[in-house]
Image (cartoon, rainbow, N blue to C red; front, top):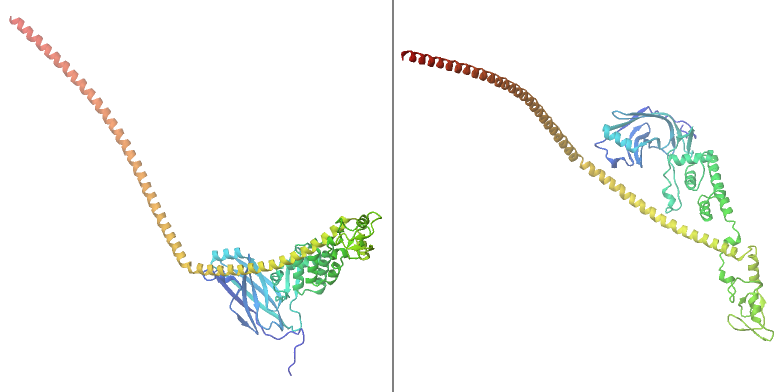
Length: 493
């Protein structure tokens, strides 16, 4: 006999532990492929699983999704993930209770991109061990449980899906809805525990985050009470802005408190209605009214009566005859209600302040409308920029091969240039070596020439000496011969 499972009962799912993987390759995954993408879906048991990733500003977010029976089941698992490349390996482990997504991690987009460009490939592998599957039809799915460890705030268990509702889609705060961050959640928890101080800058963000997340009622009421108390006593925002915040977040007590204005603060009085038409000053004394309906102050009325011989009066405004004047009790009551303010200047100041406040409220509403238009324009421009980024990514992929060829040609040219430089350097070295040898031989030749020259000089000197000796001998011989000839000639004679 079949029966319906009761709330919270574990189901027999028979899901064996499995590992799901994905690879990011530099040559295939260009920049445009990192926005809101997912890997191949794998079926394990009655549930479908896949790895997802997204480029979120300066962060690269990645995680694991379970895609089936979100409305009826919650899956309790233990997930171990490894993010690895050629030179880098990062391990991760978590214990989860989740509906549609779990195991969300984030890293710096620049670090991820540099690692991908350096190693060429990054691999993510997640091993999932399903511990329990609960039939969860009646449980609120938008629940968040946060565990604080020292100064850091860690999300331990959570239902990822957060439903966001807004009554006015043109509200400037609607862009903030749905973009929850760990920082905003940490601010809410800090206000609940007293570690985060409320101010006019983070007030609206904390209220939005508190109303979006279905956190436990005690913590939610604690945060809302602190926000309401801050708006009552410490906020520097104008009253009309605090009143709008109270209406937006349904703070009835604060709204009633801000609506308790004094009568002077709630009305705008035309000062011309309080001026005497004769002296143009605020009515002094008891105002006097003529039968025609015009009213003047008591001092002006007395001065118009003049002397006792004047038998009739005329209205100073319309010049109609008047028998007498009467007191204007209605105007007396208005002036009496203003008697609580000591001077004329304070009356005018109160009226001025009230008028300025209402004008500021009107201007603020107009600025909100203008801001909504500008936000829409910024959103459109952002979408166009993202489209341009995708086109640039595609162009980059198209030009990838020519750029690689140019880089290879440049490397080949650089290699040949280096070889030519090395050849020239070798030739220069040979020339320097040959020049040194020639210089040594030249020095030796010069030395030999010097020795030969010196030997020639010595030989020439010896030769000259020999010739001189020969010449002396010859001269002596000739002289001796001449003497003998002369002697024998003398004897013959």
